[in-house]
Length: 192
Image (tube, rainbow, N blue to C red; front, side, top):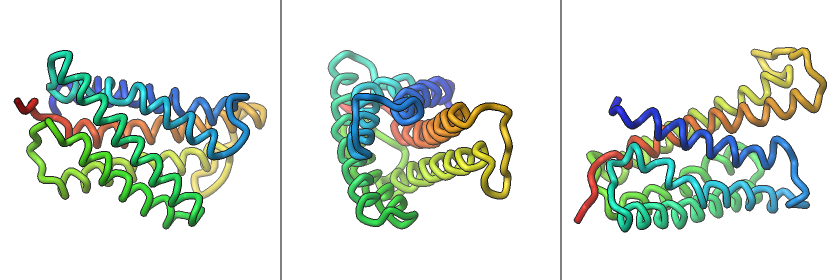
């Protein structure tokens, strides 16, 4: 593992936790599910690209700004496609197809201007694999902490606290998975 992979993954995970806090803590900023998803995406849009810089090898103000803009555009595409698929199907198929197609857009945006050891399809597969592991591990933790599923755990807290912890657990695993996958494909060197 390259030495800057862990810090970049952890920074991305912090952004994921900040994003998921919109859902975990609730907010008066949104009155609908689409509003919540929009605010969550805006957190990634604004901060996600910066967190990947330590693991990317990108240096220089102009290169960093370009990378962050590409991340914001790519993440916007990912979020729009995922949300559309979720609202269309509202099931695992919607989550998977939305994630895959959205990640194709995100990976395409991130790879512009950065050399990589992976071809495009391999890069999409790497990000999709880690994203999926993180997303569904988070979903399992969300269910488990609320005393559900095969690994049910009954926590000694009131219901509201348990729900909040469960929502943050989903954000934690989602951030670790997607962050690690993105760091893996953005490692390389800046193209001139």
